[in-house]
Length: 461
Image (cartoon, rainbow, N blue to C red; front, top):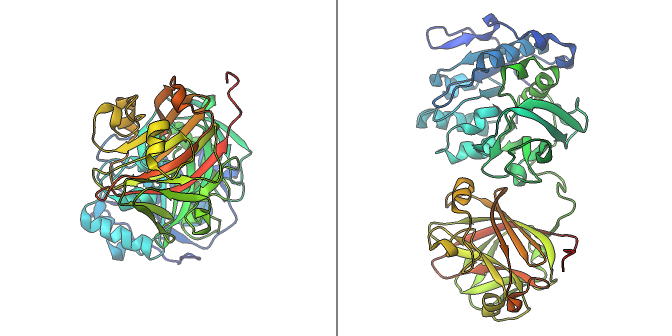
């Protein structure tokens, strides 16, 4: 880890496409007193803003603002859109590399390898706004950024809820931060692996797509290095806001190793209303039981359960529920098959769940009422919404199943994809158990972070 910055000065590479950022115009608000931090030892930051897709017209303002922040806080910014800067030798000069609203495929395989080595050697990454709209075919980068862009509504005012008042990027903010920007929805929730600093209150604006838990800024220790991401910064006006500039400065300082913070991965009890019923450890298997053939393999290092053989059901016999929110992550290999069963009576026979409960399906390909997000055999998911939210085989997806009375709502990566109401007395959801299916020898599906929150009883019941 780079716990203190190295002191060095770099020459500008005009011929190679690198610009000496000190020569760029500064954003006027960057001089505001709010953006100043305690004096740090000098260090170097590379700002990379290459675009291979949509280009934000705020990039010039972003470079200018970061340059001014550097002049006020003892770091030197070198700005480039030349991907040949991504060599091991050149990257070693920088304490942090900022991806400023990059888009699309911006690095070739050799450059990707150099950047991976830089992070693994203790380097720092700062992703700003469209940095999450970058390198979709490079899974390592997706992990570094924390989540990929999915969609956004129109630019509008929204309320940010600040979760961490200790990190240098958010310590200057109150509990709520009201501002105007373009608010990204993401393909997945980064909270499992990253430490969330701030979330969006989706009730404060139109077009949110992630539900009650919508992270917008986070940090994480990643593959030996440090990663900070903020979804803010679409508009040119953002780079004239003292609070936003101080937010960026805190992210740069932490990524560069100038200041310390707890970014070890995941917030401490970020969902206090949820009770873990499988958290990846052996003791958390207490209360679970296998019905029928096959099994689930526990990997404590990865914190996962992976299906093996079948068809069977790994069900949580410790308690039954009738009004609750069940959250978990799942990942399938290829065209595998599995599902989550709800609302079935206790039994050692997995067919009891099939005949008396409901299965929320996991399957890459099948008929509409038997593919991912469907209430198996009863109701298809909203396929357009499902396809927009779904991450492909090999990547993690998040389900939230809200069971209230006889109603099941299925959220995939924060997007509502199915809303089903039971009318069959033989399958009543008012009291029942939950379970994970192991479908067969060729079906490999993993689960992690299974947690549940009891909800108030449906007044209509």
